[in-house]
Amino acid sequence: MNNPFGALTGEERAIFTLRSLYARYGYQPYRMSKFEEYDLYVRNKDFLVSDSVITFNDTSGRLMALKPDVTLSIIKNTKDGDGTLSKLYYDENVYRVSKNSGSFRELRQVGLECVGDTGMQEVGESLWLAASSLSALGGDFVLDVFHLGLTEAALSLFPEEARPAALNCFFEKNAHELAALSADCGLSDENAEALRSLVSLSGPVKDVMPELDEIALRLGAGDSAKELAGVLTVFEGSELGERVHIDASVLGNMKYYNGVVFKGFLRGIPASVLSGGQYDRLMTRMRRTSRAVGFAVYLDELEGLTGERSPYDADVLLLCPPSAKPALVRAAEEKLIGEGYSVFAAKKPDPDLRARRVADLSESGEVIFRG
Amino acid sequence: MAELLNIALPKGRLGEKVYGIFEEAGFPCPSIRENSRKLIFENEEAGVRYFWVKPSDVAIYVERGAADVGVAGKDILLEYRPELYELCDLGIGKCRMAVAAPKGFRDDPMKTLRVATKFSRIAREFYASKGRDVELIHLNGSIEIAPILGLSDVIVDIVETGTTLKENNLEVIETVLPISARLIANRSSFKFKGAAIDRIVRAIDGGAK
Image 1 (cartoon, each protein chain N blue to C red):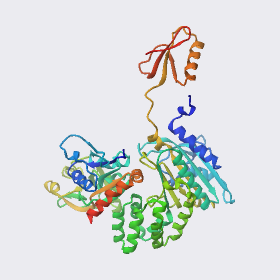
Image 2: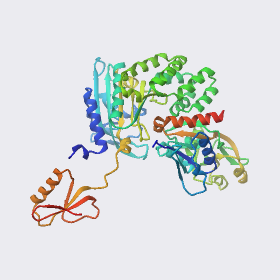
Image 3: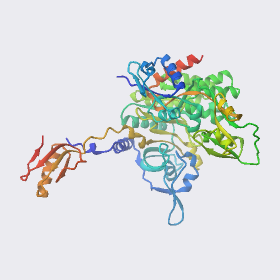
Image 4: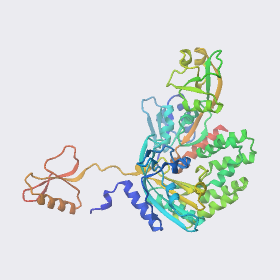
């Protein structure tokens, strides 16, 4: 049978799947122009995945940018401080330097943002939709979650100048260098041990939460652990929850992010395919009183999941006599398509074309398969 | 069939030592010890696939997921900053990154210091932290001859025994950082093959103690 979705590329299928998922939860599509004033990005450069932006002067002389990000534009264009919620999803091309190639690329990104009076329920919903997105993309997934309140409590044990190195240890799960840094900075054995445990912490919520609670109490960040546990109750009674892990290596730029942050991984893809969290601090920097949470799915990373290309260009190469009338050719094509084949009609074989079978169209309109 | 754990080993003596550690951790692959020109070795029973790669390429294989884990020098990790997990210091392959200069060299702070190195990022950050104005000259090998031929004032390079420096009339004037081999893991593989990776980490930590 013909399956119209069979013609979709992996990326198109992913977009279709995610858009319909977000729409089911009441998120509205958000469209934006390809261009935005450069000023918006330059003021929040650290928030961008890559700080290189393609710029140009428009006809009125304004410096414009090909958008490297969608979130900033959404914040700019949503209403602020009236106690309501804006739930938006987007499917946009962004233009940024690809880490892999080191050059500018047009990348497709799907994501959602919930802006307004957000609290535990909205953060929980965002986590739920992040896990659902990964599940819908197929295969085995892990959603790593953490609370930046715990990271900040850990960093506060170090003097200011040692914090970037300590933060890097968290990012790399580098327990041995964190231990050395703790010793250099004169941390107590108990605090150093708590940090060593925290940096290595990784696993399903139910296995890891008791240890996290203990560490959080030691660091004076019990509220953050409690908040994280509260948000994670969104997965109660769901199989999705088994794929949600607590992991202290999930970070976000703390000038912008706060509270719960998360990253999603799919088996077979070497880098995270989803990234998000609460970004109330970005809202404050943009002089907004609302709070916000959201995430993005990086579709360029999903290329690794796309199945192998079919070895054939068409199921049937239909060779038609040059004298055959167009209507005769069309009728033969429709007959074959109706039988579930894809057809490439031509007057003579093309050595570069790979067809599963070859058929001849007779003068009388009959399709005769060879071999 | 269970999924194999892909391990990138650095070619050479260090890699052979590292294989011994993995073997002890319960990931043997006897065929790797056979004298052959093969680069990939599998032991399905132990659930492991090893491959030999150029030491400076191990981190790339791991970051991009062709290998789940690997062993790379801290110099490579600091120079290229791949996004991966650094799980253990194996305590082998120990050496140091150092600044070396012709014997009797005196730095003139009034002049820009010319620094020849393979490790541009490490050298740049080292001198930036000291506020020293430098001109970096990126070379791909035979760094030691740069000051002899007047190409640079000093070099920043890896020093093991110091013999090569001595033979070229150079001496270490400053240590930049100590180097050793590190166990690294792909961030995504860690999520899905965590149990096997954890076994290696525990074996190494146990051995270290």
